[in-house]
Image (cartoon, rainbow, N blue to C red; front, side, top):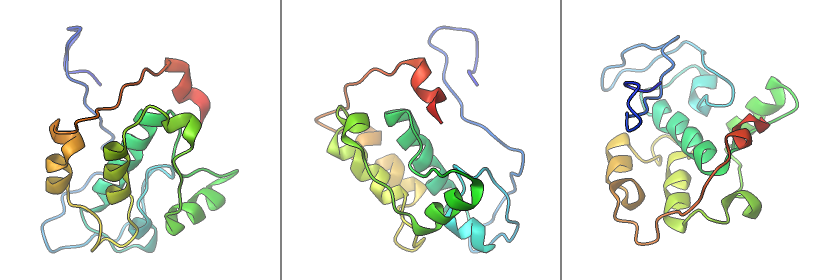
Length: 148
């Protein structure tokens, strides 16, 4: 969703269908979410706001490559791959994506929540803060995102 019709309007990502406030130190139990974006700990039914870092990592992966990091022939297969956390950076999709951008994704898509980067750390990461000396230089066709 764009903040206005202005050509330079900010893009906002939203999907608040199952949104709920989660205070620091508390956990949530409902197993809800969209299979492509859901964090592994949500599937186990015990999670905190760090699940949003995972989902944001999935979105970043998709924005930079045009395809999801986890996929399957059905939801069961897809969710099995999400639980494993195993994904790759196919050369054909990531040829113009910097190592710094891939480093950020690697830190966001970590199954162990204690090892996963925090949202504050995401915002300070060189790729997000603009301190990446080799910023990704790519263009993506709109049709690329319809491949999954």
